Amino acid sequence: MTVLVTGGAGYIGSHMVWALLDAGEEVVVIDRLSTGFDWAVAPEAELVVGDIADRDLVSGVLKRRQVDAIIHFAGSVVVPDSVADPLAYYLNNTARSRDLIESAVAAGVPHFIFSSTAAVYGTPAGDLVGEDAPTRPESPYGSSKLMTEIMLRDAAAAHGFTFTALRYFNVSGADPAMRTGQSTAGATHLIKVACETALGKRGHIEVFGTDYPTPDGTCLRDYIHVSDLARAHLLALRRLRRGGASLVANCGYGRGYSVLQVLEAVRGAVGRDFDVRYGARRPGDAVSVVADPALARRELDWTPELDDLDRIVAHALEWEDRLSRRNRA
Image (cartoon, rainbow, N blue to C red):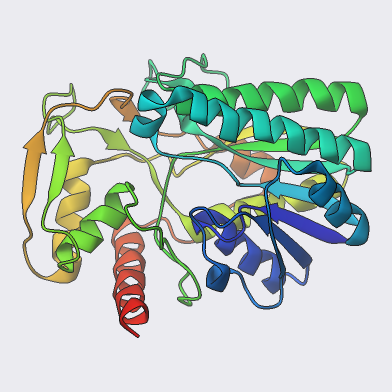
């Protein structure tokens, strides 16, 4: 049997492909390469360039490769962009996910794992956010992901497949073996942007808001290493194959760092200062979002191995340096 990874040429998806191959799985990727790269896909995986909304394409892949599980990463991920162009996010994240789910149901695919987000919670009321917290997304991005969760819940009940939706917190870092990393031009992830600035690839980095009700006035986030996240997906797949019930679970470490703390970690790793500028808050940014990861640890038997901000930053910096040399070649 084969695992289909949608968006497998992108940041998290390419890490997932490597994790699956390392575990001995057969992998096929569907990616339209709008933000991903064909070279980021492990050579042992089959890459099909196309759109998940193309039902003929998807159904052909599902049948030809005898796919028994879909891990769905394809989508748009920039919160401010979703605020500026919400309909594009509802098309790419929600409508196209609906098409993919319909293709999976038609093909009888028994298992589906979905890349969701902590943005479904908005700004949580407590220090740690659990899966039972109210879902009050503050951006179209968060809403688009929550709608897909609802579709999966209802479709699974109607059609008898099982799913896992993993709500990511702030994914960062790179493959420790440096096989892949965050490579998207113009990416907005804080650690990625800070590393680019520290290495001279950007002139400065802007901090959006210094008046939040936090210890240093900047937003707090739970940063999870991308390789730990990929391993959580692999464990979710194994659980579903063993007969596990459908599950929605957080993927984070349960510890928050402020924007300024992250910038200090990058300064320490690179050994020099860089230009930091301060601006107003951005629409859609929550004050503090930190996971309660107890459910994922219990149900998936998931124990993070790279829960260390300095290590996350070091891997991100090393990848950024390698990417610079690759792009110059």
